[in-house]
Length: 157
Image (cartoon, rainbow, N blue to C red; front, side):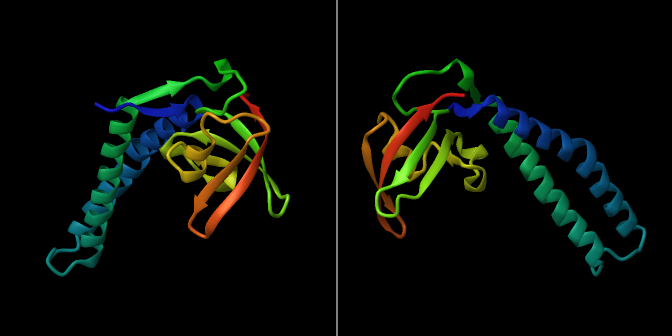
């Protein structure tokens, strides 16, 4: 059984989603199915079919969340330190072409959100950064072409 690395924050977010899906969405969908059943003929009842599809989607996500949480390997980022980039690190980068600065935190696949500055451990940029230190230059093979970055800082907080 392959462990799934994630931060404590990411684990808590998945637990919250699972709780919401089980305690709020599941009963609401059951109620929608019951109301649609009351309308009679189920073979031509669009509300019933939509509710059943929504139930299937919700139960699939519940099963996925339960699986992820059971295989979670929670990594406490606050206890990490060092000068090299690894899981949980906040890395400040400078684009060597535009001098644009960006800060990313390397997190588990399930908690990645580029808008929040969280990138997946399995992303091309993370793979290029792992093991590097402040001052190193990295080249990332991105979909839009190769990009070069300089690591300005590595923090674990």
